[in-house]
Every structure is written in C-alpha cells, then in structure tokens.
Image 1 (tube, helix red, strand yellow):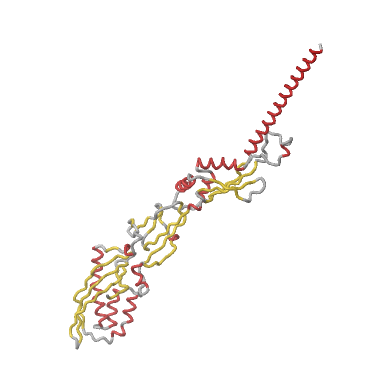
Image 2 (cartoon, helix red, strand yellow):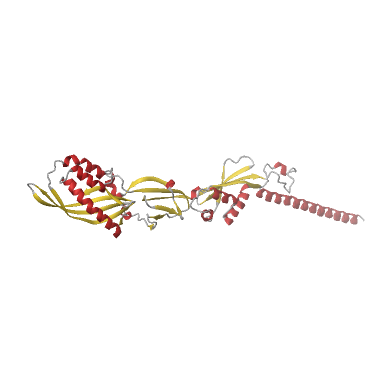
Length: 378
C-alpha cells in the first residue's frame, strides 16, 4: 500500500513538473514573441529605415512630385520641362545617398540628399504621432524602456538642381545672331558691347564707326548646349577659336566690287586734286565732300588741311589710274578697300612728276551711298 502511494506521488510530481515546464515554455514563447515584435517595431521606428525606402523608390523611379514641381519652377527659357527632366534623371541615375543634418528637433529628422558628391535636396521626417503599437507599452518591462518605437513619415521634401546649370558665353560680330536650342538670344543677354576686332584694333583710336563685336552670356542652361552662330545673311557660321577676327571678314561679291571700284575712281580723283593743292582748297573740299562721311576722322583731317593747302605750289594733277586691288567685307556695311593710285603732277620749277600712292580706305555703305571714313597710306 505504501509502495503504491509513493508511486502515485512520483507520478503527480512528474506531471506537475511537466505542467510547469509547459507553462514556462509558453511564457517564454510569449515573452520572446513580444521581444521579437518589439525588435521589429524598433527597427521600423528608426528614421533611416524610412529614408532607405524613400531613396530606394527615388533611385528606381528617378522622379517625384517634388522634383517635377522644382523643374517647372526653374528658369530654363531655351529648354522644355521634358529636356530638363531628362538631365535630372540622368543625374539621379548615378546613385542617390543621404546624410543626416542638424536642426530637426524633437520628433523630426532632416536629411540631405546627395548625388555625385553634391547635395541636391532636403527631406524632413516626422514621427507618426497617432501610431498604435501591437505591444502594450504601458506594461512592464516596456514602459521602462525610454526609446520611442513610433515609425517615421515624410513631412516635406525640397530640391535644388542649380548645380546642373551651366553658362554659354560667345563673342560674335554685332551683326551676327546667337541661337540656343532653336531660340534666338535677345539683347537682354548681351553683357558687353563695342568689342573691337583684333585685326582692326589699331584703327579704333583714330577712327569712329568701325564694326564691333558683342558678348552674349546665357546662364540658364541645364546640362550643356552648343550655341549656333548665324551671320548677317542668316547662314550658320562656325567660329574657329584658334583664328583671329579675320575669319569674320569676307571677300566681296563681284557686284559689290564693281560698286566699290566706281566709288574708288571718283574718290581718288577728288582726293588727290584736293591734297595736292592744285585746286582752290575750299572748292576742292566741297567737291570731295560727297565721298566723305560727315564727322568722320577723314572728314576732319581734310577740313583741317584747307588752310595749309593755300600755300601749295602744285599747278595741276592728272590721275592716270585708280585701281581697286581688292576689298574685304567687315560686315554691317563696312569695307576695307585696298587702292593703288597713279598720278602725274606739274609744278613750276619741278616739271612733271609721276607718283604712286598705295592706300587703305575704310568705307561705309548706307542705302547704296558709299562714304570714306578712314584713309591710311602705306
């Protein structure tokens, strides 16, 4: 009998131990389950978890509503929104990263978006204040833990693609036009005027009215654009940066050479007769006047020479030949004429003397009227 009682006691004790083990295992299971849930909640509550998801989506789609709004607000007068968007997508395709910035404050985190080593945007995150956790955080031991396990959400985003801007700057003759992406640049993009031709630089100090160049600058290019240069005839002109400004000086057409040769004939005859003193200086200046640009350097020099020519001793001048050797078109109606004049002068005591005069004359044509503005003997 006593033996049966001991066996029953052992059995009950064993059952109690088994039951206790089951209770302990169940408690451990519940506790570990809550710990696992808490670990997942904690991981999800870190702001970098939200930023990782944000950057992954941005890297995949290469676009966002904030980016679209930013692109539309950016100055890009010569490019469409689609063209600018393509440059932004190309930039983002190189990889997007983020870095934590200061100034967030409690319940807020600020991150800078980076691509290619430069920052292009800012994202601000805030905690989800009304989030309900599957764990009762008011119970032990969770209420003893000071960390917040609320997840984060994007509160705001802003982008700055000014780093994509580049400038286009080009110097062209005043009569040329500059085009970007099919859009002609207006006067508002001229940043410098009256730039002299380098091959005419020595003439500007002495003569007025010579052709000049303009400097265009356009700062709102997204990416890069090659300017298109067109001459005064609207033809595309390729500027060679290795050459001087003689590339802008064109030979004249046969028709223009014929007109300039006709001018040369009359101009040389009146110029040589006036400067020789063979005619009354006042009358000679008046006859030469229709060939001079009023107020030009040459006009002033001829007017100042009147008094001195009254003492000249030349009796007569005969122009034997006035040859236009060639002419260059400077643009804007200006031409350089290379002229050779042969004349025979007669004066008492010296008799006849034959002279050859080589000269460069810069003329201006307006409304089919040609006038000389400079003259240089060589």
